Image (cartoon, rainbow, N blue to C red):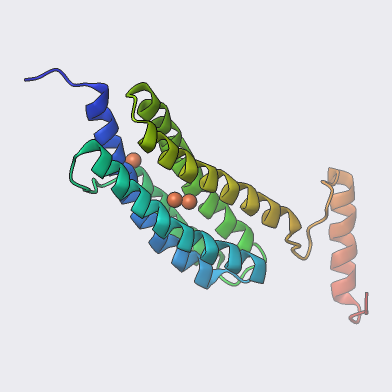
Length: 189
Ligand code: FE
Ligand code: FE
Ligand code: FE
């Protein structure tokens, strides 16, 4: 058996990301449909469209390598996707739904960042300059998408959640007040 090379590893990882990116497009569409916040919906939709271009870039990298564009099942992405489905179901309609959704979407982005990061490094080592710049472009988009999701998460307000973390004592006091309020007539805040 011939010795495996870095180029082989590059090709194998490329196939992995190709699968992950395609699966990512599907889960982004699903996530965009479930999002309640308009801003979140727009961000997920936009990144879904961006991902289509990322798939095309991957096809270009396959071409540079002179290898067929093939997807290889990525078990990590399958796992992230099935966790997402479970979480979305569990928190559907709850005040935390969008926060949970963002958490799931960021898991996808982080996996992509890890993979594109390594592919970019390997492309450079292999002297595949054009591939390196294509991968760098996508890596940057994934990082921006992750950053945007963090910003949206911070801006989301959920009822019952404060900006600053509370001490246990304050929490207890609030709980008692809330209980007392429930017993009284509803008041306009
Ligand atoms: Fe992507
Ligand atoms: Fe993978
Ligand atoms: Fe992405």
